[in-house]
Image (cartoon, rainbow, N blue to C red):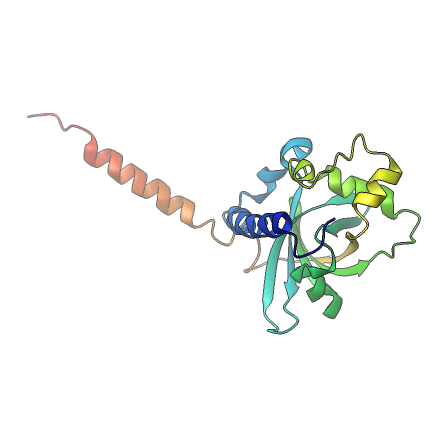
Length: 198
C-alpha cells in the first residue's frame, strides 16, 4: 500500500467515508443483511461499533469481513492510520452487527508473524467484493508472495463474539420509517386516484 499522503489513497479514503455513511444507514433501516447477498461481487459486510479514543463516544464503521469458525476477521486496508483501528488499540471491547445478529465482542490484532495471517487476510479480501480490485488486489489469482507484498501495511484483527445483544441501539433502529413511508405512499395514491362521479 502506498504512503498515507498518496493522492489516490486520500481520494479512496474519502470515498469510503462517504460510502460508509450510506452503508450504515442501510443497516439502520434493517437492510444490512441484504448487502452480503453476493459476497464475491458486492462484498460481505458487518458494522463495528468502537469507542472513540479521544471522545469516548461510540463510533460505527461498516467493514468487510470473513468468518472462520466462531471468529470474525477484519482488516485495516489503509494500515495503522485507520481511525477505527486506532480506537480498538485503545479499547478492545467492541460490538459487531452481523447478518445473523448483534454481539458484544473482543478485538485482538494478529501479529505479522502469525502463520495463519496471510490465508485469513486472503479470505477477508475475498469478502470485500468489488473493493479488492479498487485496491489493486485479486485474492483469487495472486500468489502468496505477491499478496504478502501488496498487503504488508494491512492490519488483521480477530474479533471474538462474547454474548448476543438485544434491545435499542442496534441494527434496524430506523426500521420504523418503513410503515410511515408506506402510509405516505398510500395516501398519495388515494389522493391521485380519480373519484367516480355520482
